[in-house]
Image: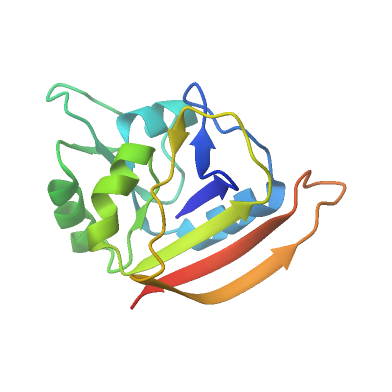
Length: 157
């Protein structure tokens, strides 16, 4: 699950670049009561574990500790842990974790923010020969959401 800009931007300086309440609401509803896998930097940008989810953190630091989280040292290990508690875990990033996870994913749940942003991390290209768009909801900017955006699901062909 990811929110990406028109130029595939994910974030800058370990922070989200935009604020879209509709995306945050959808993210919470979709991931609630699931296992969520993320890298250490993504976790640290959140500042705390996501409530009512099994938080699994990937880090190279063998001594890293995070309260109320399962800390692992590889994507393989994170998937093994996640699949013990949830048949539908979510990968939450960051960029390096998305890149590692793409070959194993069968579904991409993407919020496209229809604006280009300056960024220092980017989502991997979605190869349309591997991924087929299976659903899309388009929305215009409004009083609460500053940018046009789309909720798009891709499934592996």
